Structures are given as structure tokens and as C-alpha cells.
Image (tube, rainbow, N blue to C red; front, top):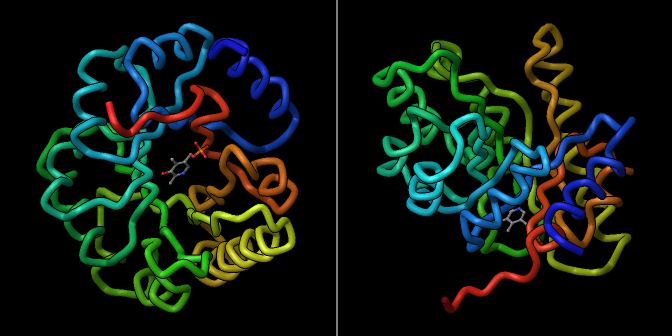
Length: 227
Ligand SMILES: *Cc1c(COP(=O)(O)O)cnc(C)c1O
């Protein structure tokens, strides 16, 4: 299927479900992104700062860009002026830096941020424990931030086709979300997102409460990292 057809396929699948699609365009060309854009899509995800900055320059500026990969503190400054959402916030220090950089640039709205919680058993995956996330939202520093809007949680499940295991991990992330929501964000409508599910498991993730699936190869085809 073409990129256009894939976008329309997801539009159809997500109609009536409170779940949005992040089209993950990492490693793919601006031409391919433009194709998805021309099919009406406006929400894209990249995992590397430099790639994101380069592509953003060449594409329409009404795209909402989500950073979904690990973010180093020293690179926040390159995206602070335009990024819509940083899904991969994995420490208070990083959030402090994002807030600082957002203050320095003239943005018309705060930077949306999600707390990345580690749900997989692979140790290489970034993310906070639930306890670290709690400590972050309880901190004085977070409470004083004016340029950050925490909009939810994000998780990357184990790379497996064991549906039972995936379900467990998705469920855990949803529980983390619900706990945070009830305890710290009950009166805050912005905190509403559970970002989970990718090409191989997005349907399962939606069944477990995902509000945002991040699909790359299922839209743009396989990635070639050797180009
Ligand atoms: C690459 C990536 C995706 C998309 O992966 P696919 O399997 O191609 O759908 C989703 N989330 C994150 C964090 C990624 O880095």
C-alpha cells in the first residue's frame, strides 16, 4: 500500500476511538513525509534532534512534531522554539532544561511533555521508574515551571510477539497513568495521554487504553539505517 493509503487506513481504524496516530518518520525522506502530509496527516514523530531540525526546515510549518527518542540536555535548545511535544522526558534535570529553553524562545504555547516510563524488561531502554515519575511531579522545581505542560505518559514495550507480555506492559503503563492522574492531575485536563503501541502491537495497545500510537514502518515501510 502507498503512504497515502496507509494514512487513510489509520484514519479509518482510529475513527470513533480516542486514539491519535503519530506517524514516525525517522530515517525516511521529506518526500515521504510530504506524501503523508498531503494525505491530511499533521502529527509526526522523530527520534533524533538533528534529523528533526533538518526535516522541519523543509516541510510545512503546521506539522506538530513529537520528539520520541532519548533527548540529551545539550540538544534541547535546537528544538525548543518549535517542537510540539517531547514524549521522552526521563528525568527532572531534562525537564528543568526544557523549561529553561522554552522560556528563552518566544513560544505561543508551552512545550507539551510526557513522562517516559520504563515498562520493558530490556535495560537498554530509557525511561523512569514509576517512583521517579512521582518524585518528579512532586518536586518543587516542577511545580514552579511555567513553560511546561505535562500531558501524559509514554512507554516502549519489549520487542516481542508475546501478546500476553505486551498486554501486561501496556496495562502497567495505564496503571501508572491512572495513579498519577488520580493523585496529582485530577483537576488537570491536559494530563490525558497514554502513548503506547507501534507497528506490530498498536491494536493491542488501543485495547489496553492507548490514546496515542506511534507507527513508523506500518506507514512508511521498512527503515534502512545504512543509507
Ligand atoms: C521507531 C519508533 C517507533 C515506531 O516503530 P515501528 O515499529 O516502525 O512502528 C515508535 N516509538 C518509538 C519510540 C520509536 O523509536
